[in-house]
Length: 97
Image 1 (cartoon, rainbow, N blue to C red):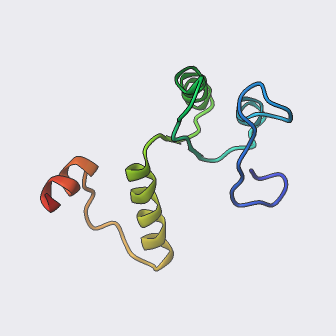
Image 2 (cartoon, rainbow, N blue to C red; image 1 turned 120 degrees about the vertical axis):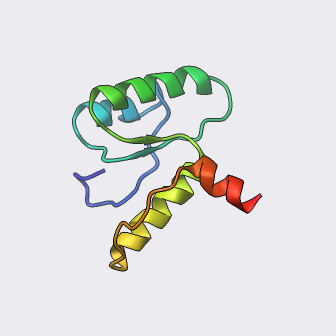
Image 3 (cartoon, rainbow, N blue to C red; image 1 turned 180 degrees about the vertical axis):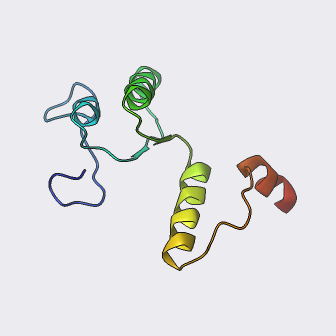
């Protein structure tokens, strides 16, 4: 969320008290979504979140493996690393197995 100075925030589930993620996406308050759904309503909420994110050009990560890969990429860029080679997650994990 950009507007309150936080780098990351957990937001209320869709329909809970407070402004939920759909409202934040709509008003441009989200730069990246990490949504690893669980529990009741997770499929419906996940669909709505991914759809809204796509409509507003917000990247959406839906697995812990993808979140870890994104973090590694950001860390590499912060350390001054260049982009030498891009690998798919499937290729990376197949090589380790």
